[in-house]
Image (cartoon, rainbow, N blue to C red; front, side, top):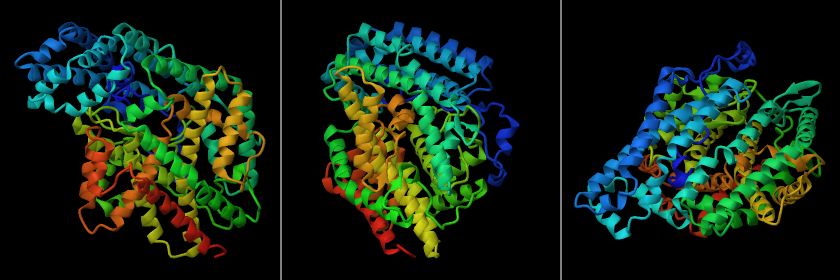
Length: 627
Protein backbone atom coordinates (compact mmCIF):
# COMPACT_ATOMS: atom_id res chain seq x y z
CA UNK A 1 0.00 0.00 0.00
CA UNK A 2 1.12 3.56 -0.37
CA UNK A 3 3.56 5.16 1.96
CA UNK A 4 3.01 8.59 3.37
CA UNK A 5 0.64 11.44 2.82
CA UNK A 6 -3.04 10.79 3.22
CA UNK A 7 -2.90 7.72 1.03
CA UNK A 8 0.37 6.47 2.35
CA UNK A 9 0.44 7.12 6.05
CA UNK A 10 -2.61 5.06 6.69
CA UNK A 11 -1.98 2.24 4.32
CA UNK A 12 1.10 0.21 5.14
CA UNK A 13 0.31 -0.32 8.76
CA UNK A 14 -3.40 0.20 8.55
CA UNK A 15 -4.81 -1.79 5.71
CA UNK A 16 -7.90 -3.77 6.75
CA UNK A 17 -6.38 -6.02 9.30
CA UNK A 18 -6.71 -9.72 9.77
CA UNK A 19 -8.80 -11.43 12.33
CA UNK A 20 -8.46 -12.40 15.89
CA UNK A 21 -8.55 -15.46 18.07
CA UNK A 22 -12.17 -15.46 18.99
CA UNK A 23 -14.11 -18.37 20.36
CA UNK A 24 -15.21 -20.41 17.42
CA UNK A 25 -18.37 -22.52 17.37
CA UNK A 26 -17.65 -26.19 17.88
CA UNK A 27 -19.14 -26.91 14.46
CA UNK A 28 -16.29 -25.13 12.71
CA UNK A 29 -13.73 -27.60 13.98
CA UNK A 30 -15.70 -30.73 13.19
CA UNK A 31 -17.16 -29.62 9.85
CA UNK A 32 -14.60 -31.52 7.80
CA UNK A 33 -13.15 -34.41 9.84
CA UNK A 34 -11.12 -35.67 6.84
CA UNK A 35 -9.03 -32.53 6.98
CA UNK A 36 -7.66 -33.16 10.47
CA UNK A 37 -7.46 -30.49 13.15
CA UNK A 38 -7.30 -27.11 11.45
CA UNK A 39 -5.35 -24.35 13.22
CA UNK A 40 -6.90 -21.13 14.45
CA UNK A 41 -4.82 -18.07 15.02
CA UNK A 42 -4.01 -16.66 18.42
CA UNK A 43 -4.20 -12.88 18.33
CA UNK A 44 -3.05 -12.40 21.91
CA UNK A 45 0.40 -11.48 20.57
CA UNK A 46 -1.32 -8.24 19.55
CA UNK A 47 -3.86 -7.79 22.38
CA UNK A 48 -5.50 -10.12 24.91
CA UNK A 49 -9.07 -9.16 23.96
CA UNK A 50 -11.29 -6.37 22.64
CA UNK A 51 -11.97 -5.11 26.16
CA UNK A 52 -8.36 -5.42 27.28
CA UNK A 53 -7.06 -2.44 29.30
CA UNK A 54 -4.03 -2.55 26.97
CA UNK A 55 -6.21 -1.63 23.99
CA UNK A 56 -7.65 1.31 25.89
CA UNK A 57 -4.27 2.50 27.15
CA UNK A 58 -2.62 2.18 23.69
CA UNK A 59 -5.40 4.22 22.11
CA UNK A 60 -5.09 6.91 24.77
CA UNK A 61 -1.28 6.90 24.66
CA UNK A 62 -1.26 7.12 20.87
CA UNK A 63 -3.71 9.99 20.87
CA UNK A 64 -1.60 11.93 23.37
CA UNK A 65 1.61 11.24 21.43
CA UNK A 66 0.04 12.35 18.14
CA UNK A 67 -0.98 15.67 19.69
CA UNK A 68 2.45 16.21 21.25
CA UNK A 69 4.19 15.24 18.00
CA UNK A 70 2.20 17.86 16.09
CA UNK A 71 2.98 20.48 18.75
CA UNK A 72 6.71 19.67 18.70
CA UNK A 73 7.25 19.67 14.93
CA UNK A 74 4.46 21.33 12.97
CA UNK A 75 5.76 24.41 11.14
CA UNK A 76 9.36 23.71 12.22
CA UNK A 77 10.66 21.01 9.86
CA UNK A 78 12.33 23.33 7.36
CA UNK A 79 14.18 25.15 10.16
CA UNK A 80 15.15 21.86 11.84
CA UNK A 81 16.49 20.44 8.57
CA UNK A 82 18.54 23.58 7.89
CA UNK A 83 20.14 23.62 11.37
CA UNK A 84 23.78 22.49 11.78
CA UNK A 85 22.62 19.28 13.45
CA UNK A 86 19.49 19.10 11.30
CA UNK A 87 20.09 15.55 10.15
CA UNK A 88 20.12 14.16 13.68
CA UNK A 89 17.13 16.19 14.85
CA UNK A 90 15.11 15.29 11.80
CA UNK A 91 15.95 11.60 12.21
CA UNK A 92 14.73 11.82 15.82
CA UNK A 93 11.41 13.16 14.52
CA UNK A 94 11.13 10.39 11.92
CA UNK A 95 11.84 7.75 14.59
CA UNK A 96 9.08 9.14 16.80
CA UNK A 97 6.72 9.16 13.82
CA UNK A 98 7.65 5.57 13.01
CA UNK A 99 7.04 4.41 16.58
CA UNK A 100 3.57 5.99 16.59
CA UNK A 101 2.84 4.39 13.20
CA UNK A 102 3.81 0.99 14.58
CA UNK A 103 1.46 1.26 17.55
CA UNK A 104 -1.42 2.56 15.44
CA UNK A 105 -0.76 -0.27 13.01
CA UNK A 106 -0.91 -2.80 15.83
CA UNK A 107 -4.28 -1.47 16.97
CA UNK A 108 -5.94 -1.44 13.55
CA UNK A 109 -4.40 -4.79 12.61
CA UNK A 110 -5.90 -6.38 15.71
CA UNK A 111 -9.30 -4.81 15.12
CA UNK A 112 -9.28 -5.76 11.47
CA UNK A 113 -8.16 -9.35 12.04
CA UNK A 114 -10.82 -9.77 14.68
CA UNK A 115 -13.43 -8.40 12.29
CA UNK A 116 -12.26 -10.70 9.48
CA UNK A 117 -12.87 -13.69 11.73
CA UNK A 118 -16.59 -12.91 11.69
CA UNK A 119 -17.69 -9.91 9.66
CA UNK A 120 -21.33 -10.56 10.59
CA UNK A 121 -20.74 -10.16 14.34
CA UNK A 122 -22.06 -6.68 15.29
CA UNK A 123 -19.77 -6.46 18.34
CA UNK A 124 -16.64 -7.04 16.27
CA UNK A 125 -17.93 -4.74 13.53
CA UNK A 126 -18.51 -1.95 16.05
CA UNK A 127 -15.09 -2.47 17.62
CA UNK A 128 -13.40 -2.33 14.22
CA UNK A 129 -15.37 0.75 13.20
CA UNK A 130 -14.68 2.54 16.50
CA UNK A 131 -10.94 1.83 16.38
CA UNK A 132 -10.78 2.91 12.75
CA UNK A 133 -12.56 6.18 13.57
CA UNK A 134 -10.32 6.96 16.53
CA UNK A 135 -7.14 6.22 14.60
CA UNK A 136 -8.29 8.34 11.67
CA UNK A 137 -9.02 11.22 14.05
CA UNK A 138 -5.73 11.02 15.95
CA UNK A 139 -3.64 10.54 12.81
CA UNK A 140 -4.88 13.93 11.62
CA UNK A 141 -2.24 15.27 13.97
CA UNK A 142 0.40 13.35 11.98
CA UNK A 143 -0.80 14.36 8.56
CA UNK A 144 1.27 17.53 8.46
CA UNK A 145 4.54 15.59 8.77
CA UNK A 146 4.98 14.20 5.26
CA UNK A 147 3.26 17.22 3.72
CA UNK A 148 5.70 19.56 5.43
CA UNK A 149 8.70 17.33 4.67
CA UNK A 150 7.86 17.79 1.01
CA UNK A 151 8.10 21.55 1.40
CA UNK A 152 11.71 21.32 2.60
CA UNK A 153 14.03 22.32 -0.25
CA UNK A 154 15.82 19.43 -1.95
CA UNK A 155 19.23 20.90 -1.31
CA UNK A 156 18.46 21.33 2.41
CA UNK A 157 17.16 17.79 2.80
CA UNK A 158 20.09 16.33 0.85
CA UNK A 159 22.49 18.15 3.17
CA UNK A 160 20.63 16.87 6.25
CA UNK A 161 20.85 13.31 4.91
CA UNK A 162 24.62 13.47 5.14
CA UNK A 163 23.97 12.52 8.75
CA UNK A 164 23.94 8.70 8.88
CA UNK A 165 20.95 8.54 11.24
CA UNK A 166 18.74 10.35 8.72
CA UNK A 167 20.37 8.63 5.75
CA UNK A 168 18.97 5.38 7.14
CA UNK A 169 15.52 6.67 6.17
CA UNK A 170 16.57 7.80 2.68
CA UNK A 171 14.39 5.20 0.84
CA UNK A 172 11.32 6.30 2.77
CA UNK A 173 12.08 10.00 2.32
CA UNK A 174 12.58 9.50 -1.41
CA UNK A 175 9.23 7.72 -1.59
CA UNK A 176 7.59 10.59 0.25
CA UNK A 177 9.12 13.05 -2.24
CA UNK A 178 7.53 11.14 -5.13
CA UNK A 179 4.15 12.11 -3.70
CA UNK A 180 5.02 15.81 -3.82
CA UNK A 181 3.48 16.65 -7.23
CA UNK A 182 0.13 15.23 -6.08
CA UNK A 183 0.08 16.80 -2.64
CA UNK A 184 -2.72 19.25 -1.78
CA UNK A 185 -2.95 22.16 0.62
CA UNK A 186 -2.87 20.95 4.22
CA UNK A 187 -6.50 21.69 5.09
CA UNK A 188 -7.73 19.81 2.03
CA UNK A 189 -5.51 16.85 2.92
CA UNK A 190 -7.01 16.89 6.40
CA UNK A 191 -10.52 16.92 4.97
CA UNK A 192 -9.78 14.01 2.62
CA UNK A 193 -8.24 12.08 5.48
CA UNK A 194 -11.01 12.68 8.01
CA UNK A 195 -13.83 12.01 5.55
CA UNK A 196 -12.29 8.67 4.51
CA UNK A 197 -14.17 7.02 7.39
CA UNK A 198 -17.54 8.13 6.01
CA UNK A 199 -16.59 7.77 2.35
CA UNK A 200 -14.60 4.91 0.79
CA UNK A 201 -13.95 3.08 4.09
CA UNK A 202 -17.67 2.99 4.84
CA UNK A 203 -18.49 1.63 1.37
CA UNK A 204 -15.72 -0.98 1.72
CA UNK A 205 -17.26 -2.12 4.97
CA UNK A 206 -20.77 -2.22 3.46
CA UNK A 207 -19.46 -4.45 0.66
CA UNK A 208 -17.69 -6.80 3.10
CA UNK A 209 -20.63 -7.17 5.44
CA UNK A 210 -23.11 -7.62 2.60
CA UNK A 211 -21.01 -10.26 0.86
CA UNK A 212 -20.42 -12.16 4.11
CA UNK A 213 -24.14 -12.15 4.94
CA UNK A 214 -25.34 -13.39 1.53
CA UNK A 215 -26.62 -16.95 1.37
CA UNK A 216 -26.81 -18.90 -1.88
CA UNK A 217 -29.47 -21.57 -2.38
CA UNK A 218 -27.81 -24.67 -3.82
CA UNK A 219 -30.28 -27.54 -4.06
CA UNK A 220 -32.17 -26.36 -0.99
CA UNK A 221 -29.10 -25.61 1.13
CA UNK A 222 -28.35 -21.99 2.08
CA UNK A 223 -24.59 -21.59 1.83
CA UNK A 224 -22.05 -18.78 2.23
CA UNK A 225 -20.11 -17.62 -0.81
CA UNK A 226 -16.82 -19.41 -0.02
CA UNK A 227 -18.48 -22.82 0.00
CA UNK A 228 -20.36 -22.12 -3.23
CA UNK A 229 -17.28 -20.84 -5.08
CA UNK A 230 -15.51 -24.01 -3.97
CA UNK A 231 -18.25 -26.05 -5.65
CA UNK A 232 -17.11 -24.71 -9.03
CA UNK A 233 -14.23 -27.17 -8.66
CA UNK A 234 -16.46 -30.12 -7.76
CA UNK A 235 -16.04 -33.31 -9.87
CA UNK A 236 -19.78 -33.28 -10.64
CA UNK A 237 -20.94 -31.03 -13.49
CA UNK A 238 -24.39 -30.98 -11.93
CA UNK A 239 -22.95 -29.52 -8.71
CA UNK A 240 -20.85 -26.98 -10.64
CA UNK A 241 -23.84 -25.84 -12.68
CA UNK A 242 -26.06 -25.55 -9.58
CA UNK A 243 -23.37 -23.50 -7.81
CA UNK A 244 -22.94 -21.15 -10.78
CA UNK A 245 -26.68 -20.65 -11.10
CA UNK A 246 -27.03 -20.00 -7.35
CA UNK A 247 -24.26 -17.40 -7.53
CA UNK A 248 -25.84 -15.70 -10.53
CA UNK A 249 -29.30 -15.63 -8.93
CA UNK A 250 -28.14 -14.08 -5.65
CA UNK A 251 -25.76 -11.62 -7.33
CA UNK A 252 -28.63 -10.49 -9.58
CA UNK A 253 -30.94 -10.02 -6.59
CA UNK A 254 -28.32 -7.74 -5.00
CA UNK A 255 -26.91 -6.16 -8.15
CA UNK A 256 -28.39 -2.70 -7.52
CA UNK A 257 -26.49 -2.44 -4.25
CA UNK A 258 -23.21 -3.62 -5.78
CA UNK A 259 -23.74 -1.23 -8.69
CA UNK A 260 -24.27 1.66 -6.27
CA UNK A 261 -21.13 0.74 -4.30
CA UNK A 262 -19.08 0.51 -7.50
CA UNK A 263 -20.40 3.79 -8.92
CA UNK A 264 -19.81 5.61 -5.64
CA UNK A 265 -16.26 4.36 -5.14
CA UNK A 266 -15.35 5.02 -8.77
CA UNK A 267 -16.62 8.60 -8.48
CA UNK A 268 -14.87 9.04 -5.14
CA UNK A 269 -11.60 7.96 -6.76
CA UNK A 270 -12.16 10.22 -9.77
CA UNK A 271 -12.65 13.23 -7.49
CA UNK A 272 -9.48 12.43 -5.52
CA UNK A 273 -7.44 11.80 -8.68
CA UNK A 274 -8.68 15.02 -10.31
CA UNK A 275 -7.83 17.15 -7.29
CA UNK A 276 -4.41 15.58 -7.01
CA UNK A 277 -3.64 15.91 -10.69
CA UNK A 278 -3.28 12.27 -11.73
CA UNK A 279 -3.59 12.02 -15.51
CA UNK A 280 -4.61 8.38 -15.87
CA UNK A 281 -7.16 6.39 -13.84
CA UNK A 282 -4.46 3.96 -12.68
CA UNK A 283 -1.62 6.45 -12.07
CA UNK A 284 -2.25 6.63 -8.31
CA UNK A 285 -1.80 2.86 -8.09
CA UNK A 286 1.35 2.96 -10.20
CA UNK A 287 2.77 5.65 -7.93
CA UNK A 288 2.01 3.66 -4.77
CA UNK A 289 3.54 0.59 -6.41
CA UNK A 290 6.66 2.53 -7.39
CA UNK A 291 6.34 1.26 -10.93
CA UNK A 292 6.30 3.25 -14.15
CA UNK A 293 3.12 3.34 -16.22
CA UNK A 294 5.11 2.19 -19.27
CA UNK A 295 6.19 -0.98 -17.46
CA UNK A 296 2.59 -1.89 -16.59
CA UNK A 297 1.43 -1.04 -20.12
CA UNK A 298 4.12 -3.34 -21.52
CA UNK A 299 2.98 -6.15 -19.22
CA UNK A 300 -0.68 -5.73 -20.13
CA UNK A 301 0.05 -5.51 -23.86
CA UNK A 302 2.22 -8.64 -23.74
CA UNK A 303 -0.41 -10.65 -21.87
CA UNK A 304 -3.34 -9.52 -24.02
CA UNK A 305 -1.36 -10.35 -27.16
CA UNK A 306 -0.71 -13.81 -25.67
CA UNK A 307 -4.38 -14.65 -24.96
CA UNK A 308 -4.63 -16.91 -28.06
CA UNK A 309 -1.42 -18.73 -27.10
CA UNK A 310 -2.42 -19.12 -23.45
CA UNK A 311 -6.05 -19.15 -22.34
CA UNK A 312 -7.67 -19.71 -25.75
CA UNK A 313 -5.28 -22.56 -26.52
CA UNK A 314 -5.62 -24.20 -23.12
CA UNK A 315 -9.41 -24.01 -22.89
CA UNK A 316 -9.72 -25.49 -26.39
CA UNK A 317 -7.60 -28.41 -25.15
CA UNK A 318 -9.66 -28.75 -21.97
CA UNK A 319 -12.93 -28.75 -23.94
CA UNK A 320 -11.58 -31.70 -25.94
CA UNK A 321 -10.83 -33.60 -22.73
CA UNK A 322 -14.47 -33.12 -21.75
CA UNK A 323 -15.65 -34.17 -25.22
CA UNK A 324 -17.18 -30.76 -25.91
CA UNK A 325 -16.71 -28.04 -28.49
CA UNK A 326 -16.89 -25.41 -25.74
CA UNK A 327 -17.13 -25.53 -21.97
CA UNK A 328 -19.91 -23.70 -20.11
CA UNK A 329 -18.38 -21.05 -17.86
CA UNK A 330 -19.00 -23.14 -14.73
CA UNK A 331 -16.60 -25.80 -16.07
CA UNK A 332 -13.68 -23.40 -16.51
CA UNK A 333 -11.97 -24.68 -13.35
CA UNK A 334 -13.52 -28.14 -13.31
CA UNK A 335 -11.17 -30.99 -12.37
CA UNK A 336 -10.13 -33.20 -15.26
CA UNK A 337 -12.51 -36.04 -16.10
CA UNK A 338 -11.55 -39.53 -14.98
CA UNK A 339 -8.98 -38.17 -12.50
CA UNK A 340 -9.73 -38.97 -8.88
CA UNK A 341 -10.04 -35.91 -6.65
CA UNK A 342 -8.67 -36.71 -3.22
CA UNK A 343 -8.99 -34.67 -0.07
CA UNK A 344 -5.65 -33.49 1.27
CA UNK A 345 -5.59 -33.42 5.06
CA UNK A 346 -4.01 -30.47 6.82
CA UNK A 347 -0.90 -32.33 8.11
CA UNK A 348 -0.05 -33.44 4.56
CA UNK A 349 -0.57 -29.94 3.19
CA UNK A 350 1.70 -28.50 5.89
CA UNK A 351 4.46 -31.06 5.32
CA UNK A 352 4.27 -30.69 1.53
CA UNK A 353 4.83 -26.94 1.64
CA UNK A 354 7.50 -27.00 4.34
CA UNK A 355 9.45 -29.74 2.55
CA UNK A 356 9.35 -27.82 -0.74
CA UNK A 357 10.52 -24.66 1.00
CA UNK A 358 13.32 -26.52 2.81
CA UNK A 359 14.65 -28.05 -0.42
CA UNK A 360 15.16 -24.52 -1.73
CA UNK A 361 16.34 -22.87 1.48
CA UNK A 362 16.33 -24.21 5.07
CA UNK A 363 15.93 -20.64 6.30
CA UNK A 364 12.76 -20.21 4.24
CA UNK A 365 11.28 -23.35 5.78
CA UNK A 366 12.33 -22.39 9.32
CA UNK A 367 10.49 -19.08 9.06
CA UNK A 368 7.41 -20.76 7.56
CA UNK A 369 7.43 -23.38 10.35
CA UNK A 370 6.78 -20.63 12.90
CA UNK A 371 3.36 -19.96 11.39
CA UNK A 372 2.31 -23.50 12.31
CA UNK A 373 4.09 -23.72 15.65
CA UNK A 374 3.01 -20.32 17.00
CA UNK A 375 -0.65 -20.21 15.90
CA UNK A 376 -0.24 -17.57 13.22
CA UNK A 377 -2.69 -19.31 10.85
CA UNK A 378 -6.49 -19.41 10.84
CA UNK A 379 -7.61 -22.19 8.47
CA UNK A 380 -11.22 -23.41 9.08
CA UNK A 381 -14.23 -22.26 7.10
CA UNK A 382 -16.67 -20.56 9.50
CA UNK A 383 -19.96 -18.70 9.12
CA UNK A 384 -19.26 -14.98 8.72
CA UNK A 385 -15.52 -15.43 8.20
CA UNK A 386 -14.03 -13.36 5.40
CA UNK A 387 -13.81 -15.37 2.17
CA UNK A 388 -10.57 -16.11 0.33
CA UNK A 389 -7.13 -15.94 1.87
CA UNK A 390 -4.53 -13.38 2.87
CA UNK A 391 -1.32 -12.81 4.81
CA UNK A 392 -1.42 -9.67 6.94
CA UNK A 393 1.95 -8.24 7.99
CA UNK A 394 0.50 -6.40 11.01
CA UNK A 395 3.55 -4.40 12.21
CA UNK A 396 7.30 -5.04 12.52
CA UNK A 397 7.08 -5.15 16.31
CA UNK A 398 4.75 -8.17 16.04
CA UNK A 399 4.49 -10.74 13.23
CA UNK A 400 2.23 -11.62 10.27
CA UNK A 401 -0.96 -13.68 10.38
CA UNK A 402 -2.37 -15.88 7.62
CA UNK A 403 -6.07 -16.43 6.92
CA UNK A 404 -7.24 -19.37 4.80
CA UNK A 405 -10.53 -21.14 4.13
CA UNK A 406 -8.99 -24.61 3.87
CA UNK A 407 -11.16 -27.34 2.35
CA UNK A 408 -8.61 -29.94 1.31
CA UNK A 409 -8.48 -29.27 -2.43
CA UNK A 410 -5.11 -29.37 -4.26
CA UNK A 411 -5.59 -25.65 -4.95
CA UNK A 412 -5.90 -25.08 -1.20
CA UNK A 413 -2.39 -26.51 -0.78
CA UNK A 414 -1.15 -24.03 -3.39
CA UNK A 415 -2.98 -21.25 -1.54
CA UNK A 416 -1.21 -22.26 1.67
CA UNK A 417 2.14 -22.15 -0.16
CA UNK A 418 1.18 -18.75 -1.61
CA UNK A 419 0.16 -17.11 1.66
CA UNK A 420 3.13 -18.55 3.55
CA UNK A 421 5.34 -16.98 0.88
CA UNK A 422 3.78 -13.63 1.74
CA UNK A 423 4.26 -14.34 5.44
CA UNK A 424 7.94 -15.26 5.08
CA UNK A 425 8.49 -12.14 2.96
CA UNK A 426 6.86 -10.00 5.65
CA UNK A 427 8.99 -11.56 8.40
CA UNK A 428 12.19 -10.98 6.41
CA UNK A 429 11.26 -7.36 5.59
CA UNK A 430 10.16 -6.47 9.14
CA UNK A 431 13.62 -5.34 10.37
CA UNK A 432 13.34 -2.37 7.98
CA UNK A 433 10.79 -0.87 10.38
CA UNK A 434 7.22 0.33 10.02
CA UNK A 435 8.04 2.91 7.34
CA UNK A 436 10.21 0.76 5.06
CA UNK A 437 9.06 -2.83 5.59
CA UNK A 438 5.99 -2.61 3.30
CA UNK A 439 6.80 -3.83 -0.20
CA UNK A 440 5.21 -2.25 -3.30
CA UNK A 441 2.45 -4.47 -4.63
CA UNK A 442 4.33 -5.31 -7.82
CA UNK A 443 6.99 -7.10 -5.77
CA UNK A 444 4.74 -8.08 -2.88
CA UNK A 445 3.52 -11.08 -4.90
CA UNK A 446 7.04 -12.37 -5.63
CA UNK A 447 7.57 -14.60 -2.59
CA UNK A 448 4.00 -15.90 -2.66
CA UNK A 449 4.07 -16.98 -6.29
CA UNK A 450 7.62 -18.33 -5.93
CA UNK A 451 6.46 -20.39 -2.93
CA UNK A 452 3.69 -21.85 -5.07
CA UNK A 453 6.17 -22.68 -7.83
CA UNK A 454 8.54 -24.43 -5.43
CA UNK A 455 5.68 -26.53 -4.05
CA UNK A 456 4.34 -27.38 -7.48
CA UNK A 457 7.71 -28.34 -8.97
CA UNK A 458 8.48 -30.60 -6.02
CA UNK A 459 5.17 -32.39 -6.32
CA UNK A 460 5.52 -32.68 -10.10
CA UNK A 461 9.03 -34.15 -9.85
CA UNK A 462 7.73 -36.84 -7.51
CA UNK A 463 4.89 -37.82 -9.86
CA UNK A 464 5.64 -40.73 -12.21
CA UNK A 465 2.04 -41.56 -13.16
CA UNK A 466 1.20 -39.86 -16.49
CA UNK A 467 -2.45 -39.30 -15.62
CA UNK A 468 -1.54 -37.64 -12.34
CA UNK A 469 1.16 -35.58 -14.06
CA UNK A 470 -1.38 -34.40 -16.63
CA UNK A 471 -3.82 -33.42 -13.86
CA UNK A 472 -1.11 -31.56 -11.95
CA UNK A 473 0.10 -29.69 -15.03
CA UNK A 474 -3.46 -28.78 -15.96
CA UNK A 475 -4.15 -27.45 -12.46
CA UNK A 476 -0.95 -25.38 -12.51
CA UNK A 477 -1.67 -23.98 -15.97
CA UNK A 478 -5.14 -22.99 -14.78
CA UNK A 479 -3.69 -21.28 -11.74
CA UNK A 480 -1.22 -19.38 -13.92
CA UNK A 481 -3.95 -18.39 -16.36
CA UNK A 482 -6.03 -17.19 -13.41
CA UNK A 483 -3.04 -15.24 -12.10
CA UNK A 484 -1.88 -13.73 -15.39
CA UNK A 485 -4.68 -13.74 -17.97
CA UNK A 486 -7.61 -13.35 -15.59
CA UNK A 487 -5.96 -10.58 -13.55
CA UNK A 488 -4.97 -8.62 -16.65
CA UNK A 489 -8.57 -9.01 -17.84
CA UNK A 490 -9.69 -7.69 -14.43
CA UNK A 491 -7.35 -4.72 -14.85
CA UNK A 492 -8.72 -4.08 -18.35
CA UNK A 493 -12.28 -4.24 -16.97
CA UNK A 494 -11.43 -1.77 -14.21
CA UNK A 495 -9.85 0.64 -16.68
CA UNK A 496 -12.88 0.59 -18.95
CA UNK A 497 -15.28 0.93 -16.03
CA UNK A 498 -13.47 3.88 -14.45
CA UNK A 499 -13.05 5.64 -17.80
CA UNK A 500 -16.73 5.13 -18.65
CA UNK A 501 -17.76 6.34 -15.17
CA UNK A 502 -16.30 9.75 -16.00
CA UNK A 503 -19.21 10.20 -18.43
CA UNK A 504 -21.83 9.57 -15.77
CA UNK A 505 -23.27 6.89 -13.50
CA UNK A 506 -23.23 3.36 -14.89
CA UNK A 507 -26.19 1.02 -14.90
CA UNK A 508 -25.85 -2.60 -13.82
CA UNK A 509 -26.42 -3.56 -17.45
CA UNK A 510 -23.59 -1.33 -18.68
CA UNK A 511 -21.14 -2.71 -16.13
CA UNK A 512 -22.21 -6.23 -17.10
CA UNK A 513 -21.64 -5.34 -20.77
CA UNK A 514 -18.08 -4.20 -20.10
CA UNK A 515 -17.46 -7.31 -17.99
CA UNK A 516 -18.74 -9.70 -20.66
CA UNK A 517 -16.73 -8.05 -23.43
CA UNK A 518 -13.50 -8.32 -21.47
CA UNK A 519 -14.23 -11.88 -20.35
CA UNK A 520 -14.97 -13.07 -23.89
CA UNK A 521 -11.73 -11.53 -25.12
CA UNK A 522 -9.64 -13.18 -22.41
CA UNK A 523 -11.32 -16.60 -22.19
CA UNK A 524 -11.73 -17.20 -25.93
CA UNK A 525 -14.25 -19.18 -27.99
CA UNK A 526 -13.87 -22.44 -26.08
CA UNK A 527 -15.60 -21.03 -22.98
CA UNK A 528 -19.34 -20.67 -23.46
CA UNK A 529 -20.40 -17.80 -21.22
CA UNK A 530 -24.01 -18.50 -20.27
CA UNK A 531 -26.65 -16.04 -18.98
CA UNK A 532 -26.06 -15.01 -15.38
CA UNK A 533 -22.29 -14.59 -15.71
CA UNK A 534 -22.76 -10.88 -16.46
CA UNK A 535 -23.15 -10.31 -12.68
CA UNK A 536 -19.94 -12.06 -11.61
CA UNK A 537 -17.95 -8.84 -11.49
CA UNK A 538 -19.85 -7.95 -8.35
CA UNK A 539 -18.07 -10.28 -5.92
CA UNK A 540 -14.43 -9.39 -6.71
CA UNK A 541 -13.20 -7.62 -3.54
CA UNK A 542 -10.11 -6.08 -5.15
CA UNK A 543 -12.31 -3.81 -7.28
CA UNK A 544 -13.71 -2.39 -4.04
CA UNK A 545 -10.75 -2.34 -1.66
CA UNK A 546 -7.77 -1.73 -3.94
CA UNK A 547 -8.58 -0.34 -7.39
CA UNK A 548 -6.11 -1.60 -10.01
CA UNK A 549 -4.36 -3.87 -7.50
CA UNK A 550 -4.95 -6.86 -9.74
CA UNK A 551 -2.12 -6.31 -12.23
CA UNK A 552 0.30 -6.96 -9.35
CA UNK A 553 -0.61 -10.66 -9.56
CA UNK A 554 0.27 -10.84 -13.25
CA UNK A 555 3.42 -8.81 -12.61
CA UNK A 556 4.39 -11.19 -9.80
CA UNK A 557 3.66 -14.38 -11.75
CA UNK A 558 5.64 -13.32 -14.83
CA UNK A 559 8.44 -12.03 -12.61
CA UNK A 560 8.59 -15.34 -10.73
CA UNK A 561 8.55 -17.35 -13.95
CA UNK A 562 11.56 -15.34 -15.11
CA UNK A 563 13.21 -15.71 -11.71
CA UNK A 564 12.58 -19.44 -11.70
CA UNK A 565 14.19 -19.74 -15.14
CA UNK A 566 17.28 -18.03 -13.70
CA UNK A 567 17.15 -20.36 -10.68
CA UNK A 568 17.07 -23.45 -12.91
CA UNK A 569 20.21 -22.26 -14.69
CA UNK A 570 22.13 -21.12 -11.62
CA UNK A 571 24.46 -23.53 -9.87
CA UNK A 572 24.78 -21.72 -6.55
CA UNK A 573 24.05 -18.50 -4.69
CA UNK A 574 20.52 -17.98 -6.00
CA UNK A 575 18.74 -18.67 -2.69
CA UNK A 576 20.98 -16.19 -0.87
CA UNK A 577 20.30 -13.45 -3.45
CA UNK A 578 16.59 -14.27 -3.35
CA UNK A 579 16.40 -13.91 0.45
CA UNK A 580 18.30 -10.62 0.22
CA UNK A 581 15.71 -9.38 -2.25
CA UNK A 582 12.85 -10.26 0.11
CA UNK A 583 14.68 -8.72 3.06
CA UNK A 584 14.86 -5.37 1.25
CA UNK A 585 11.15 -4.74 1.82
CA UNK A 586 10.30 -1.30 0.46
CA UNK A 587 13.85 0.07 0.52
CA UNK A 588 14.64 -0.51 -3.17
CA UNK A 589 13.04 0.00 -6.57
CA UNK A 590 12.13 -3.09 -8.58
CA UNK A 591 14.95 -2.37 -11.03
CA UNK A 592 17.53 -2.51 -8.22
CA UNK A 593 16.09 -5.72 -6.79
CA UNK A 594 16.02 -7.55 -10.12
CA UNK A 595 19.46 -6.43 -11.27
CA UNK A 596 21.43 -9.15 -9.37
CA UNK A 597 19.43 -11.73 -11.33
CA UNK A 598 20.11 -10.09 -14.69
CA UNK A 599 16.42 -9.16 -15.12
CA UNK A 600 14.87 -5.87 -16.23
CA UNK A 601 11.08 -5.36 -16.23
CA UNK A 602 11.46 -2.55 -18.78
CA UNK A 603 12.74 -5.04 -21.36
CA UNK A 604 9.87 -6.57 -23.41
CA UNK A 605 11.77 -9.88 -23.37
CA UNK A 606 11.30 -9.99 -19.61
CA UNK A 607 7.55 -10.54 -19.97
CA UNK A 608 7.95 -13.00 -22.82
CA UNK A 609 10.22 -15.16 -20.65
CA UNK A 610 7.50 -15.39 -18.01
CA UNK A 611 4.74 -16.11 -20.52
CA UNK A 612 6.80 -18.72 -22.36
CA UNK A 613 6.89 -20.89 -19.21
CA UNK A 614 3.08 -21.10 -19.30
CA UNK A 615 3.19 -21.87 -23.02
CA UNK A 616 5.71 -24.63 -22.37
CA UNK A 617 3.39 -26.32 -19.86
CA UNK A 618 0.47 -26.14 -22.29
CA UNK A 619 2.65 -27.67 -24.98
CA UNK A 620 3.52 -30.55 -22.67
CA UNK A 621 -0.18 -31.07 -21.95
CA UNK A 622 -0.83 -31.29 -25.68
CA UNK A 623 1.73 -34.09 -25.93
CA UNK A 624 -0.02 -35.89 -23.05
CA UNK A 625 -3.46 -35.63 -24.66
CA UNK A 626 -5.24 -38.93 -24.55
CA UNK A 627 -2.78 -40.47 -22.09
